[in-house]
Length: 593
Image (spheres, rainbow, N blue to C red):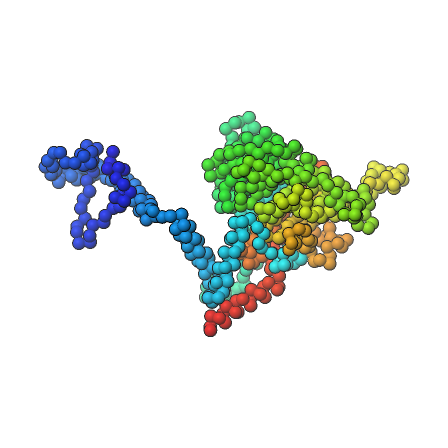
């Protein structure tokens, strides 16, 4: 064994010769020579070799020397790092890491300043302090961003896009790419277009004579994969053999994970959509997925009433969480090792504390606006039969590590906190009521023989899609009323307040021709949201997928529905834009001073 591996780390550093000395040739050593070197010289040195023999030895052992030198370089670097930090106390290590974090944050703030062309010292301190406060709040898992007043939702620019496919069941976004799944078995990768001002940048000093090309709006299809039912009996096949119904993309853009009706959870390479590994631990259809924020740990829920944890860095199954009494419809997670799931007709939401191996149970199914009591009064003119009780919890989304929102089949949008077992606030019939059936529809074409009193009361629309922007006050919900509605968390974090509808002025939200103006025709089965620009300086983008059927069944069918995407570009408000311009002017003025 070479003496290199027996010497302490301090002696592994390579000493470089002085500039005046000529470089010496290094000869390959044998095992016997290395052993004798460690034990000490016992025999007189051998006679020097001839020149030809030395050259021959160098030719033979050249490759060995190269690999040995590379290993020595790597080990010497690690040894030097360990020796530099050797004897460091815990307090000194924390101080060193904090200084490194501050240096990294200063570089990011300097990049923002260069973009806006100001570098005043006072503004520098404010930006750095603001960034540190936001990072500290996010590490604690608290809501710290108030985005609702800054965004102009009524003037959101909608882009409708559809292709020849079945009902789109799920969508996930890792900018600038979006991933969708459909009921006809396709997983598709799309490239979303940039904002118009960023699509055709000017590359010359002189202004071009020709006008710029019109901006692109439709997404571009990059790749797709289809399930193969004929390989259902092939145990070595790593793809889906039935339709995938849910998809999630990792935050680092390396992995795309889908869950399907074939009880598989398939991991793909995000760049080429080539399947890497298929997990078969679930015993029924996989209905929901959620990545732990900033990691490659993923939670999956299934109709087998379990939540399972996987680690994609090791491509390994970790553990199973038991507790639900019915099919689990959805799951969501944020930065900490926690997740929230909803259990359909057991009407419970469960908050899982994975390291502690415990869970908190939140039971729904209460009044919540379905009965006429002192606490929950029905609006005037509403038929009591239209105020349905909660039958199933179908959707869940987390605002922070202590507050989450659920959506139910009776249209209730409920706000929950881990500090209370009951809902903090419930918005009843969040997406309104279905229109009443006509006598012709109920009588089978003979309305004369039908009694008008037998017409059932109109029923509320269920919440079919729910999404939030993590650690902010924004909530997005979807149903089959042709719109994506926006809600906000109140300042005291105890209520859900209505903001409006994407792409519709506030005056026309309740007008009769809303169905004609709406672009989200059909069932809104899923919603994905991401921010444009650095920390959302250019607004946000909302991607909603629609179809003629619900994502998990055919309980209701809409002929007028469209299978495709609806993309909403939500800009900043005029007040917010003016504020950004004033900040830029103040930065220039302080620069000149």
